[in-house]
Length: 75
Image (cartoon, rainbow, N blue to C red; front, side, top):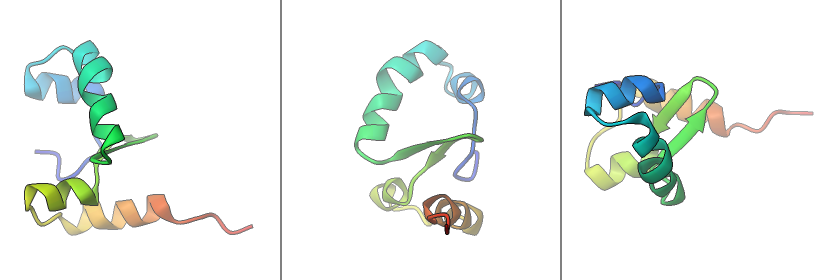
């Protein structure tokens, strides 16, 4: 639906027809812990591990965004 993100919690809650508090308090911590979700300043993103687990090929835009998130800033 969101091509890997980013997506805000309210938009995700509306799509899933679920309360945003439930997503934040119950679902999100689990997905973060197992490495399937990344929280960014722009919103939540599905990770490469989640795509692999689901057997889905990630869109190029999702891979590019994830690589930039993992780059270390040079000092």
